[in-house]
Structures are given as C-alpha cells and as structure tokens.
Image (cartoon, rainbow, N blue to C red; front, side, top):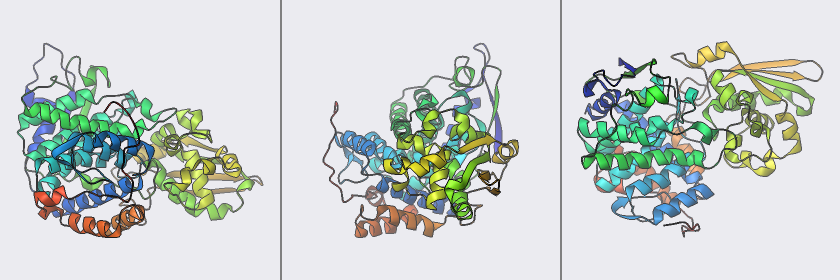
Length: 493
C-alpha cells in the first residue's frame, strides 16, 4: 500500500490531474490485477449475505416503495430486482436492491476513520453487470475494486466529524467498481468518480434525531447516482476538478478546511485489491457498534437474573459508540418507547436492555412496537447510559480494533457486576468468526418462507461458481420471492 497525502490547493497552484485523489482512485480501480482466490471467496460470501438481508426485508414498506419505483422502469436487457421476475433499468434495479439490502442494517461493515457498509457497492455493480452482459469474472473484479476504494477512503478521510454522511465515500467507490467491471479507461473512471462524489455529499441528519426510512435509501441513492455518473462519463461528460483538493472543493469546505491534510492508503500498481478481507458482517440486525455488546448482553443476562434488582448500567466504550448510538448523542429519541425502528437500531441503551432480557436479538421481534413498549423493558432501558473511555477509543483505532466495551451493572444491594468484550463473536477476531457455512445459514434462515427452497438452492449453487459464470448466468442471479409484487404505492411514475 502507498500512503497518498491529500490537501487543498489554491486556485493559482498547479495540481496535475495524475496527482489528484480522484485520479489515483480511478487508477486503482482500472488496474487489472488478478483477483486472489481468498478475495474471490469473500466476494461470494458477501453476495450471499446481501441476498439474505434483502430477502428478510422484502415485505417492508420502504423496500416495497423502492421496488414499485423500479417496476415502473422496465429495461432491455436490464437487471433483476429482488423479489420479482423480469428485468428493469439498471439504475432503478440498483435503487430497489440497494434499499432492500440496507433496510434492516444487517450486512457488512468497515469502521476506521469513518463508517461504511461496503456491501452497498454490490447492488449497483451487479445491476450494471447484468444489464451490460458481463461475466462472473468481471463482476468479481468490479466488486473487489468497489470494496477497495470504499475501505481505503474510510481509512483515510473522516466524514462524520463534519456531519457528512458516509455515502460520500460510497458514490466514488461504486463508480470505481463499475468502471473496473466494464474495463473503462482511467480517464473515464476519473470523471465518473468526480461526478459521483459531487452528487452524493449529504449531511448526517439522516442518522440523527428521528431517523426515517431515508437511512436505508441513502446508500441506494449513492449507487444509483454512481451508475448515472459512469453513464455520463462514458458519453464524454466531465466532473468538477479537482473535486477533493480544489479551492472550493470537498476538503476546503465540507471537511477540515484549506489547511487540512489527509492520508489515504491505496494499493500500488500491480498490487492486488485485498481490502474486502478487512471488512466484517453482522450476526445481528443492528448498528455494527452494537454487535459485540449484544453478544456481551447474552452472556451477562443470566448473571443478573432479576432485572428489577438493577440500579443502573454503565457501558464504558469508544467515542464513536458513545456519540453515535449511545447517550453521548444527546438524542432523547434513543430512550423513547415510541421511536421508529431506525432510531431504536441506533440506540445501544435499548438494544442492550432487550438483549439482556431476551438472551438473543431478532431482526423483527426485537424491534416490534409492543416489545419496545414493554414496561419492564422501558424501566431497564432508562437505567442504561454510556460513557466514553479513552482506552476503548484508542483500541477502536488499533490495527486489530476493538468495537465493544466494558459494562458495569450496579444492583440495588450495592453489588457490582462487570464484564467486557472487544469484538463481536462473528468478527474475524471473535469467538465464532463467520465463514461460508455461517453465510449460507444466515441466508437460509432469512429466506425461509420468503424464497422457495428450490430457488434458494439454485441461487446458492450458481453464486458459488461466481468467477466462472457466463453473462447469462450472471443475469440469472435474481431472487423471485413468494410475495405479491403488485405495486401498492403511488407516485409520479
């Protein structure tokens, strides 16, 4: 990996195009190095993982609305949409599939200087592969490139401290992945990355206060914007330049200002794209920084026994966890029994309370309004707070990071119970790291009763051969479901 220094350049300073970050990202995307066997296996795992969580969300209202929009845009050759037969315009297929994948907050993650869900790259890259008639090997190359750019940007540039949503890294990475898939020139991908970044910068209010369904839509918007950016760039249209380093660019006005310096690590020429191997998926349908704490709650609950004997619970954790999903966010909604599912998903006090009481976490049951309103849960929930612990913040940023915390439970009789956990059980460094069997089991469990068994079998058999698939087989990677797909929402289209 090569560390690239990135800063703002004044209007009268010279910054050759080849020295711009957008060009360097494009050069990595278009460097046609072989994809390693280990990366290929993980790409297959993540395609299965995306399909699993999309199946589980297929009947949810935001997913239905996005699917209805896609059904209004049939395409030739087109791309598949989760849950239905037929082919649809690729940008709209990516939109619908992106919402389905993201709705339950249940797929993969990478946390470093910023946050990300790299699996959000898959819907737009897959949709373009199907529409453009690309092979499985092309698809693997594109997904590996999308993950690489996403992870490297997240390692080097923090968006959230400036309240910029993390889809600002997704637009460029998806554009780069599509460019790699299609074998485009560095020049074309450079222009597409610039356009995608320019159109996908948005504030983090989508993940603050009353969190709406736009939390699921935002990554799908970035994927759709990336497809459209690549299309325009292929037609010869350009982007603002330099998009990151310009005097009125992203660094100067949206991030840390004209005097800021960032370091973005990228593979050198001829170096394989391995960053997907540093990402991790979720065993539980909740924000990633709650994964380890759910596992801790499951083992701590039996030690507590009678929850009405709890005086208070303090979770000592990292700055990120405390301020994003903990009491440090200052959001009263995180303690509101009538809060939306999306808000509860970002409330570690709620999540920890339910996981303590139930000894499990379920993507539907744990968020049910009646579950959130249960009096004994509300009572326990209000007793849970978080504090930032500098040691956990330090460990969060280590090469082998810790995303958990230390919990202190004080009982009414003065007894104090403590326990801690560094990473989720399913994390590569955890007690039960996810491998192919676990990805398949997750798919089977979430697709049960939604996708016919024979369709499940066919999908898993096909995707297991991903690098060998023909264009026709890539085009068959759809998942028609046992649902009524008749549009049920009305809009402009």
